[in-house]
Length: 429
Image (cartoon, rainbow, N blue to C red; front, side, top):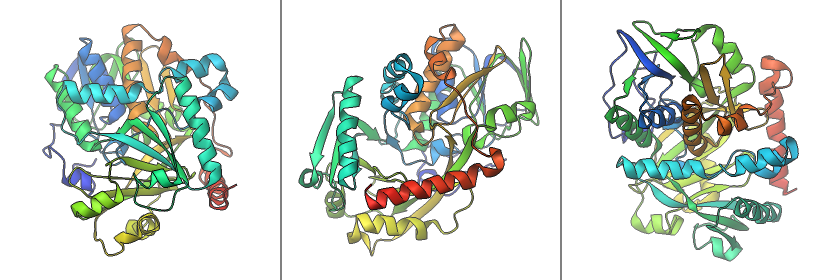
């Protein structure tokens, strides 16, 4: 149990630092949500808006996991795009998922506006190509996304991209004006406030120790329990301690770590030099770099993956060289914050949605595209619990494959694959 947030820029600038109470009684509810990250909060909020009574149980703090430590970028679609989905699962599935690919970002903007959430929301995102092959990929990407309704895209050539990003590293870019960025921990805290404003209850430092299945589920914590008609499991990479259900949710996924650093506050001149339009950026490499300016003008820069969520050691030593490769003008800038956090990877890099029995739902495994996909997941789970499950079932019906070699070999096999694709990126092939 973690009663405080890991040190990060987001934790240091959280709008609210006091903890909600620990569950110490027996409650009943229509729905019990396990996990107060984006998936759990989005589910609880969409349910509360529909009039359901909701209890959220969080083992540590709201947004403790990836939801409160990520790069904060509103990136649409999934870790695999619709052409991949069509090849593997058919046109009908691709069209259905394509129709939902841009919904998560719209949900975020609606919640921010409707509940007046202070999370430094800014519009605009850039996908930057590091070689000619990647730029051709962006041309294809633009046509694909336009097919599914995104009409806010613009291709930038090598000279044009330098109007948006102060580096000569890129051969071109795709600008998505419907993308954007946020302070992710403050978004989770604002969503939690919204749930409570609608009558929902949230308990922190209340790890779930067991889920007893039945017509009504009984969810136990060290000091209390919740009896609910439905359960939503939203622990993602930080799922633990729920008894016999755990293997069903972890055998086909793998936690992975990513690292982030944040500079000191930069001068207005330097901010203008680096990102004059204040858009967020991610490159097109397999092991990608991503960065943006914070609300107060710090550069937040992340990149790299550690498979199996092992501790990477000195984070600044890993990420600072990446930052300086992009922005050598920052060589004398001080790094004020450095942290790591885990996301959950699936073999096919598509989210895993499903049911256990008739009344236990789960959604996890966003594979690096969690900020928007989690918010979509909450809407789909809430609709399914309400009795409208067709859109949820599009995801739930996707096959779920185990990693080759099982749990023992998933880390080395995946790391070898990542090395291969990283080498292809570097060679531009």
